[in-house]
Length: 389
Image (cartoon, rainbow, N blue to C red; front, top):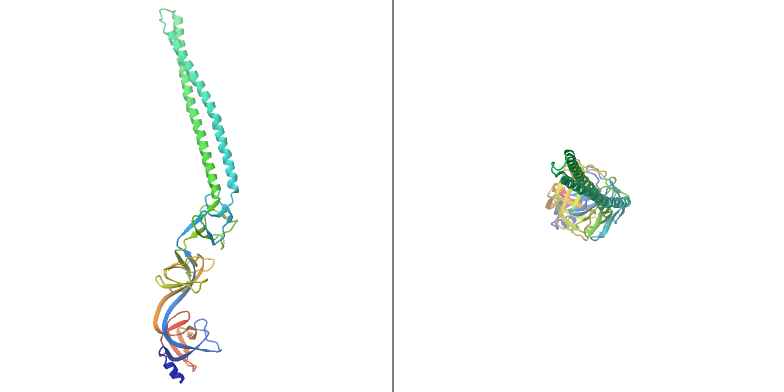
């Protein structure tokens, strides 16, 4: 069969053959060298935009630095990044040397306050009893003086009667003073006891705080899962033993592997190339044969500063996840399907030669054929015109 008849017999192909050329950037002239033939055929062509990103969990249980008195605390030991842990397992150990010294100091302080209180109470009780006895004695003296002063004036001489009246007054004054001294002592001793109680309570609270800090030196896993160590805020690396952290700083997390999404960066030069709502295919770098459907949920409007290069943040949701192969931080390739061209004339992307905004293919006889390109996948481009079916 002649060659022309052979290609006419296939309804899905055209009667044109194009030379497949090694093409770099758009507008670059192809280099001389061996050429292979590419066939124009009808097929569904997707306009695909490629992104790279990494998996991240939608929810995770945080493992944070506990509150230690005196500022920062150093990591002494850390579970291996990516290790499987069970609830209650020890995952982080902080340096407790300073906490232990504080713990012993506060135990000593509490005991000192308790001893002072134990010694003070009997002393105050004895002094109070002495003052109460003084009041009782003054009351007896007043009663005796009152009996003496109650003798009628006619029975005694004027001088003696006046002496008895003066003695009664003196005893009453002494009683009043003794009662005042007792009341003042009761008030002051109560205040002293309250100060001791407050001091003891404060010493006890300080000791309990130190004991909690010592207990917090060993951090336990809040749930079963994968232990993911966070990055150090000062350097582009994971946290490790010897790093000093402050209260509340997130050390690690245990993600929920059942709900995950993709975090990616769109280069600044490509801003506007994709929009929210576009369908995606997510392919794991470690499992290139696995593809997970998703969609673009959000494209950031601001490109944050980054040591590793700029870009606009892109968030891609997944319709399903596989906890057996998916782990937070794993690299993925995201194919964003911007447009679908069903049953379109298509040609291998490498067969196109671009000159500015124009595109050409080379026929077998070497003559260029200008074509109008609708869109391209990584390997194939859909044509609007330029080649007849």
